[in-house]
Image (cartoon, rainbow, N blue to C red):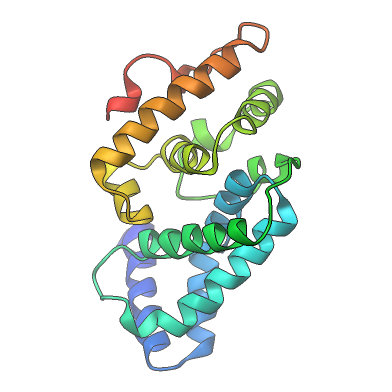
Amino acid sequence: MTGDVLTAQLEREAVLRCQQGDQEAFRRVLDFHGDHLYRTAVLITRDADRAEVAVQETLLVAWKKIRSFKAGTNLRAWLNRLLINCISRLNRKMQLETAPEEKAFTVADSGIGPEQSVLNAETAAMLQLALRTLSVEHRTVLVLKYFHDMTVPQISDSTGWKRGTVMSRLHRATAALRDAVAASEGFVDPRLSGEEAQS
């Protein structure tokens, strides 16, 4: 049995126990997905403190709604959707402020490939500056696509947006980010070049 299969099996067991009211099992869910949620929240909100608030609220909502989660479906997509909804609620309460998100580039996330998780300092700094120029919706779609390597259907499941909306926002956000990054000493991240946004 491979590590991935074992992890999926343990996750299913933990979710079933959560649905029966087992709080200790919920800690296992946090072990599987906590870093991913925090990293995503920091990249979208651009604020470490606000990201922590969003993740905490997401986990509270997840615990309250865990019985509604359908076994066999994508737990991470479900948690992502809760997180994005929580961030949207927080954004309606307060105006976003520019803040460093360097911490998001150092949080381990076993769900992404090495080329995404090991960004060099120059690339990270330029991407951080460029991301700050984008709207929350555009940052969200780029974070899910390029930092978590999600497909359009997966982004649609995580956000609740229609696939056409995801593709439109991804196209516009990729173009805007590419222009912003290119303006920084002519740098262009290879993940933002070509036709990758079409996948």
